[in-house]
Amino acid sequence: MFLSAALGALVLAQAATAPLAAAPDRLTRCLALVDEDATRAYEEAMAWAAETHEADAYRCAALSLTEQGRYEEAARRLQALATAFDGGEPEARAELLMQAGNAWLLAREPGQARSVLTRAIVLVDNDTDVLPDLLIDRARAYAAETDWRKAEEDLSRALDLRSNDPLALRLRAVTRGQQGAFDLALADAQAAVNADPADVESRLVLGHVREAQRTGAMPVE
Image (tube, rainbow, N blue to C red; front, side):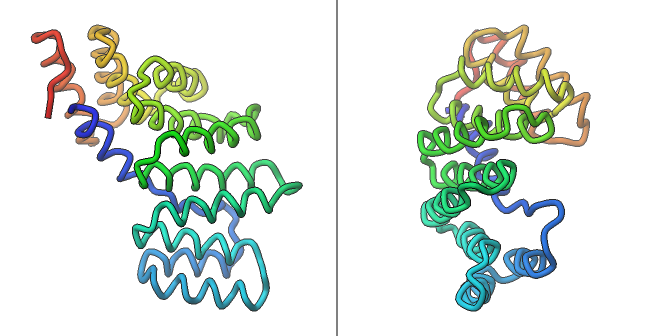
């Protein structure tokens, strides 16, 4: 299906390991090690956790599991950490839930991802910096469930807040194409290419939409 070509790879490419912008030094070092040696990062994070019981240690351990491909385990740990963080800053809890949602997407469990991301959206509903990313991620979950209408709604809302986001434009092009709205899909795909001319995925989607205009259906791959 075109879904697996245009969206499935996108889900797998999305990073679930983005650190807080102002992460403490020990967390920064731990996350850097995740990229270099995820197994060692897990071991060091768990030793750190045993020593201090700090939330950041458990978080780094969970993210190292994501890097190892243990997506469901990572998602459950991140969710549990967000719940244990109850009473903390909403933005911090929402970020943990966002990372859990991405891990669920990587585990090919879009229903779990959608549920977790909805919780995160509720937490930061007025934060226009974070909300577009959460809406895009939830749209990916809806798309993986082939709920194109709801995916389009989330992407439109994200684009209301961040008008030239190439990922949101590209994904909305796919959702509109899947619903047969090829002219709107073409406009989105072209806008995605204009926003980031070097992005190969956007050009691929543009080609698929142009093909769909000729054939009346999105290509099957």
